[in-house]
Length: 462
Image (cartoon, rainbow, N blue to C red; front, side, top):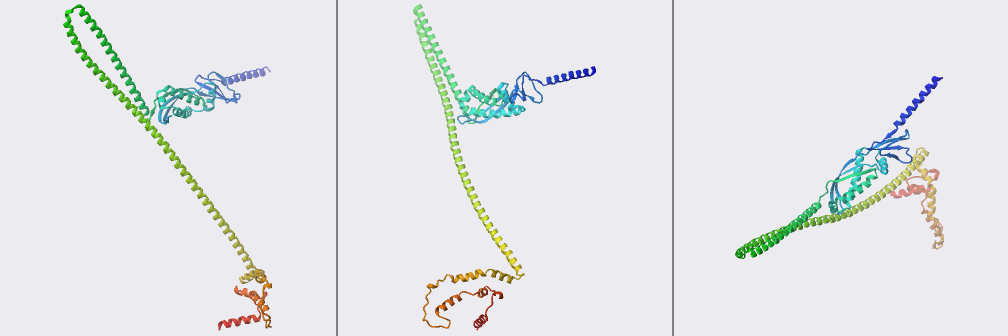
């Protein structure tokens, strides 16, 4: 009994130790360069994100993955971006991004980037950067982009950073390598600025030289005056020497004046050349602007004309397609109608042929008797037709003038009616005209009629 209790106690201890190790193995620590993403049953949110620290991951109902916080460098070679002045520029640049560890943005990264490779994240971010960089260039003038780089970088950082935060990334650094344009507008602006700086420097040097010359002349003037006064007071006999000195000074001053004149002339010449170069640079810049405006207007006109031309072509194609479909519909309707008529006629003829076969079978295969049977079927209609020929004659309107004489065959009125009735062909004549002979069971010709017929035939032969 004691052994059983001992075995049970040892088993419970082993089970407790196993459970302890199991729970320890589910306790996950997050390194400082990663984000721990716990997903599954997380209390109503899509995931639980930890930047540093540790958390317990429940088995079965939860699982985990890591997001790397290492920076990702992206080269963006933007080509032919359209600026606010409709000038296309090239902006090669390098962006450095990383998964954000901000509390709200980490959930975006867990929802949109978890399980993706570094290259896939780089491609997604590159597409966003391309679009926002084009947008920033389109909202600024060339002068702003070229002169105020800080403003340009601030706009890029703001736009790109806001869009990257939506997918859980943060913008670390933006480095614009250079900005170029195919039209040479930026280069013309640089030459204009350089010419302006050179002119300012030359002007400053000339002013300093002028001030130095004036100061030197004033100092020499004071020196000469004081020396002359001292010589006049000290030795009056040195007047001749002073005259010689004065003459010498006059000659020297003349030379100095000539030298000053040459220097001033040279300075003016240099200033004129600097102004000429500045005017030339401004002229080139204005010509570049004019060419750009001309190209823009021509492009607008060409685009509008192409749009109008394409619209006319599309309308013509649509009208042609409509006519073709209507014609095809009418042709199909006619064909279907003719096919239906032909099918109906075919059915009628087929049924008639079947009926004829049945009649021939009823006549034991004798086609002549079969034709007689068909004619016998139509006898009521033939008799009705004969009756209809004289039925509607109104005898109350027939006036016959006669002398009242007694004739062999009756009066003129009786003869008129008899002759009119004879005008209606008898049944036997109808059969004869059809090339047939009335069957014996439908009636026979009288002997007198037969003889009369023979006499008529003999008279025709004679």
